Image 1: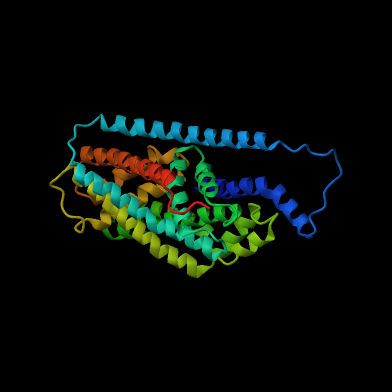
Image 2: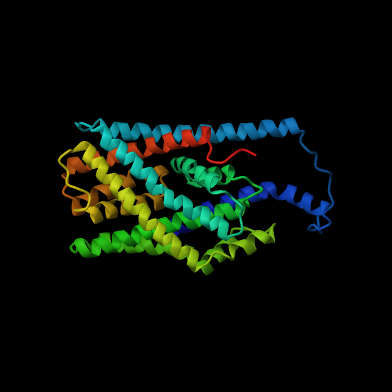
Length: 361
């Protein structure tokens, strides 16, 4: 668990270093032009600058490669989910399915706003519309192995002159782990109250909560950012990250409770789409909430693209203990939930990519 967390920390903040390193040459040249002393350089043969048309072609090739990677791995996840559904007999209520999609996308909104809030607190000028656009589209990156594509997509879609890439990537790290920490804490509380004969589930949730929350504590977070090299070439970025404190973090915890509540309702709507006789959401609300949160956190820390397999197994175990579902119903709901969420992400990403929420400059 500790190794996975350290690895994921390096991946998340390493994306910032990668993007920041790409911009370093331009930043140094701009500083020299303004009369600011640049760091000393060693004598050597002059570096040949690439022609503008070559740079454009390389940038286009990089974008095409990123797009192809995302499409390929999303395709694999989509086929796996459809294959799982093919193993069961099922009928579907499309209106409840649409409700599940809407609740999922609405549930992600507070997390996207929290990422934007982190950027604003850290002195970045990113607009809410473009931040939410980058946030939703960035979710497709989690289906690529290593999860680094999430950082690349999000930071790449935020305008560079309004948000430092290192700060933006560090914000992704803080937002994501805050979401996982809150989800694991909620699951632990529900398990402690409703399931007292399965201590392994409770202590597993506690361990996931500690592993996710510890790196987001401001002093720890600031040190990890320094170790990752954020602000090494631009001291202003490091100073901006120091503004991220406990007040912002507590606001994030409140926002993430709303996230998990709506994601739990999305699971309930999915079950209702498959079984019209399912009871209302309030009777087993905390069961749905804990099942979704525990499954997603375990899938996230597994490092497997989209948490494939791990998330489904944990969701089956949690629903068996917390919800009035049989084994076959739980397996069908888990497969359908994965398909519903993936299709929702594809739809909102296509809409926001074609019709951005901010005006082009």
